[in-house]
Image 1 (cartoon, rainbow, N blue to C red):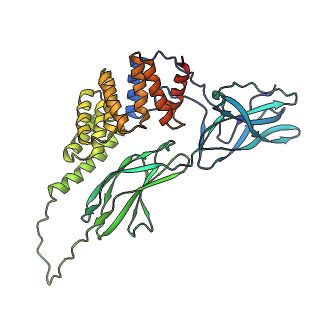
Image 2 (image 1 turned 135 degrees about the vertical axis):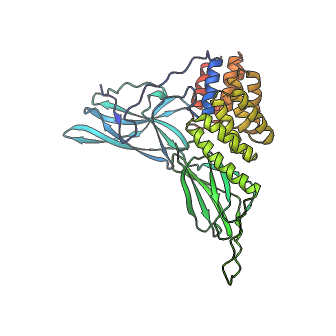
Image 3 (image 1 turned 90 degrees about the vertical axis):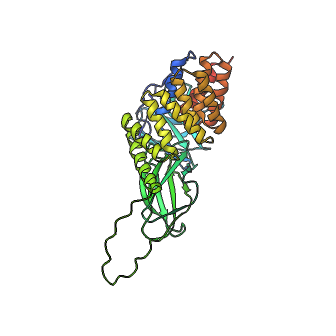
Length: 428
């Protein structure tokens, strides 16, 4: 019998065992663990360890085989049909032969639409024997992810045009929505001083949700700043911040003789407050990323005190407190921030996670539902709501939340796959 061929060229040289579907006896410990994972940005609980994925912005995928059974006469390329739940033939590999033996092969797959496409190679020998493979998608060798949609980038701050003095600093912050985000370093900051006709890069290798301090130059004029983000497939999304106008520095009057040295004026309270807050926030965010929680809490508290309108600092402070086990203080910060920014879904979402950790499921549900009303596509909140509903014994409510996760989550999300598994397993 023909043995299973092995994908090459980085496609699927090997993979670990696939995690089986969990039974439905999920309880509060599971909900709390999921909430903490979401809060700290770790992979979601129950993430499916499936075959490797290849991301492309074009629909044609070139696939190679490194090793094939020398006796294989044909290797078919198969794709999993999610509608019929069956594998169907999508083509055949062109095999490399030498002295009558098969050494490898190549094939192309054209994705019919954007999304995930589960592929596998299946060999047959001269007698028609095929390598044994399962009928479920777990037997895939690779997942071809066709993604031609650019990331959606949103400028969080500033929200209106700015007038800056030469040398002044302005905190820019942004967030990105993307089904297939790049692992790290996907964002860059670019500036234009000719109305957008040409751009130069100020910084690169930044997170797709993050911040950057823009420093005004000494010469006056108008500037445009944009954030560019690339996803795993190489698609580029952009957002331009509100216009920045830099006032020209006043020219010094001509002097017949050297002017006396004047005492240097100290910056006004507003300028000092803004500059210090940005510096404190940058250092605090870096400490939080490094899990230096005590340092992060101190710096982010100082940033919030120095600039109460710095939204990102409030959010990071709440995370630093919760990760440090100070759930009560984290709750206080989030409740104040939610009152301050009532249209933001981020604060009630994080508040719900903190309340789960505090063992207050009813209040957690209320907070998470507020987040869903503000952002109906926040599928992570629906996932935690489903676990809380299951914990309370309401399977139908849990199923309704799983359906929302399956609707809103990108196809590549493990939460979507897990929700579909739970829906199938809990059908009456």
